[in-house]
Length: 79
Image (cartoon, rainbow, N blue to C red; front, side, top):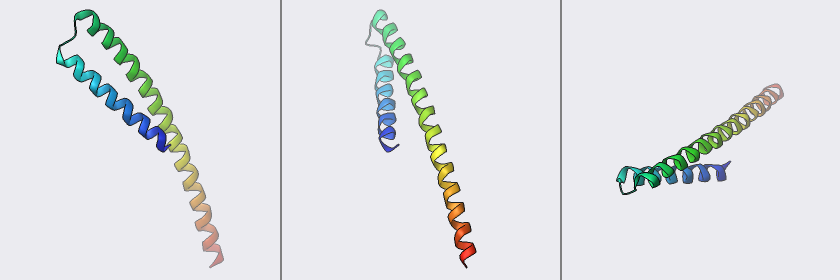
């Protein structure tokens, strides 16, 4: 999961750089249109990766919560 954090941060940075390039106004219309399409694809893929990552984290945290509850109950019974 930690490696995914790095990948997601890198994808966000790439998108920001791409947006700055588009806002800079240095591209001709054809390159600008192509760049916008590329950015949309990049952002859509990033969104899907983020959703998948969040689902994994939620699953992991739910399992951790269950494990901690069981451990706490066992320790309470031992007292």
